Image (cartoon, rainbow, N blue to C red; front, side):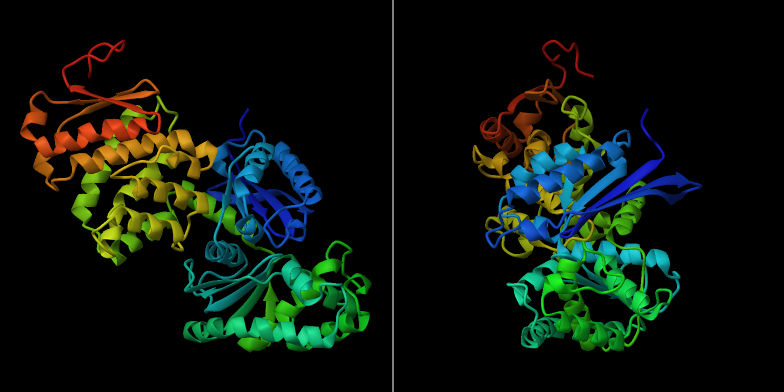
Length: 509
């Protein structure tokens, strides 16, 4: 029996994999289960973006265990995200296929800035909603996210390519810790923080918060040292920890009260990053939040299901930025979504596909803000590479695919650029947006016909009113050209009269 009231978030970090399961009670989410495993996937990734076999198997074993816990929870109530190390995989698709099979749900690879936004949502759970501006620092295995603001939507989101695993490997490649190497690495990080420092001044933050395992581990070490309950961290705490780590001389020789053996190999890099951040930003007191990315993913998932989707905000903002012709975008959107409703069942299309098609239609002409020639390519490039709050990399790739091939020629291997699990849906979605663009070419509401669209899974049949084609020769020619192009991706198109019955289906409605 599906667990209809359960929601789950999976955070596949560079150092640890986390899962949190919550139950919906009285309109709120109450955490009922947490699982964490130290996978250290970043440690198994070489400079070429290849994952070694031992780490590969360790990751899949963890995902299979997570998958057992997730069994029975509806897929729409689960979201799994991959962070910096997943972004660095040279060929992520083969690994994602087996990883998603083990986990039992799709894995969204998110950008650094999207990761920062989700960290912000998680950190807000432990703070008053009306609190003054604050800055949040999250040190992961492969990256560090810095985010600041006052309300639910942050004003600053930054992601640095420095994490506790990557910095430890880079600063102390042979395991030997020296003061010279420490200073050199800290200066390198501080240089990267200069631009963030300037932007933070514009936010005017008043409170600093640290999240995630590395910072909580440093807090635990200080508490064990002092024999006290955990408290905020100060620059003096970090200076003392640095002296003790340098005295150890080697990463494997670091022995500090409160430090777990799992965290020991990478704690030096994490301390180094935090010291650079606190020094650059002038932080005298760092409060520690028990909430981080996975809770943020859960909050965001719940918001989407409650129709508070940041992706909608991103699309509206991008359309405005590029001066989209809203009337034309709505024409294309309305036709495409009307067709979607008629063929969704035949192609097992879901609400997620509906939304992505909707957003793609509304953004299909943003490339005109760059140049009219090949505007579809410009539209695709912007959507694929922009930081769009709420979207995963795969979602942006799918929308970019629809925009790139909304008109002109479709290469026969176009679908191969997408993950295999998206291809069947993408084929039909592309047909819908192409038909919409072709029929709306005159940019006039009066030229749009009544229509019926049906599918048997391999063939689309578009039925138009008798005589419409003769009265609209430009649109008719555009539709005729779609037959050849759609056939390249394995979808046959037939155009007939609205009164004609479809073979084997009886009269058209």
